[in-house]
Image 1 (cartoon, protein in one colour):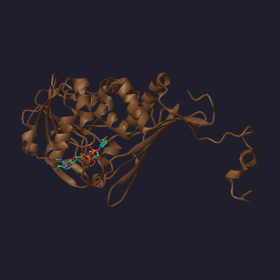
Image 2 (cartoon, helix red, strand yellow):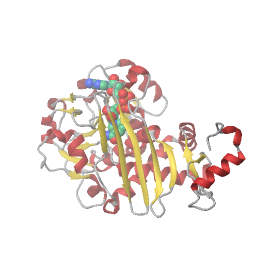
Image 3 (tube, protein in one colour):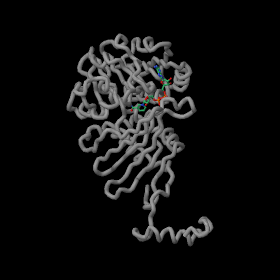
Image 4 (cartoon, protein in one colour):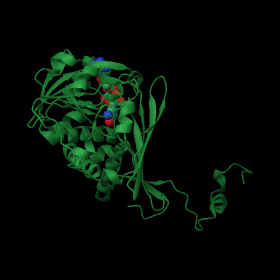
Length: 357
Ligand code: NAD
């Protein structure tokens, strides 16, 4: 891959879908989860910074960079909860992987589908260490774009095969139920979030609303539950009642970012939280008691996207599921950039306006 200096492998949405189908969704999630775990184990090698967010009344646009010293990655991602009303996605993304040694991009890829996969893989990795052993029942509140990916990741990685679904929009629940039909789930569509959490060992909240919502109240959370809180990922955008946080052991990706964006923005800035990487690296315990309430306060961190980019780059090698993008100017003599334009004018004069050069 990428023998010519001027071209960069580009994975379109169409190629990403083919890559996922050729791999198998479950295998894709399992392998991606392994890449995430590998990168979380070497957490200390990475450059880390809270993502750079540009907020507006309707949503947010964010840049998420990181590097392990050899490879650099970033993702452009948006979050616009009202987008679905105009037929658009709430979350879209694309990303780049680059060589730190020469700064050249090595991969440009769609990341809307990839973000849903990586978020689900990340949630399932967290639950592997934090959920009650042998948990098979998950409540999922918010049945939008991310939801099926979450369900499939929890099945593939933890063996969760009973789902209790709730969404304020029943058509979202119906679509999620239909999409997951025949995949080995027993699914109950619920009419309230209270009903959805009944009997669930894992509760996933993955709603989209630009406000401090209360998807779960304190009385809905019994002892021993693992909460996978995915939807609260911006300042002023949370899903859980504060009292739940006070009863939970809270695990986060990168604390400086989660303090700004996660459920814990509701708590004092020095409220103790545990870095998930420490649990994965064996430096801190995960679930340590049957009655413990564990909370993965997920916001999405750059290292997970880096893992996803790395995984896609490695998977592409054998599949050919990419295009070569003419992205980088490559004159014969590196300093003769302008001469390259002059030579192009000679070889393709009709394409230029008269007198342009
Ligand atoms: P989406 O708009 O496709 O789906 C959201 C669903 O939530 C909709 O079906 C909506 O009806 C439902 N909903 C809204 N309010 C609700 C409520 N009070 N009770 C029950 N259901 C409710 O959005 P999506 O792409 O699935 O993303 C969901 C959320 O996850 C967003 O907030 C997004 O920003 C977030 N997200 C987080 C990460 C992460 O890494 N933590 C990654 C991707 C997306």
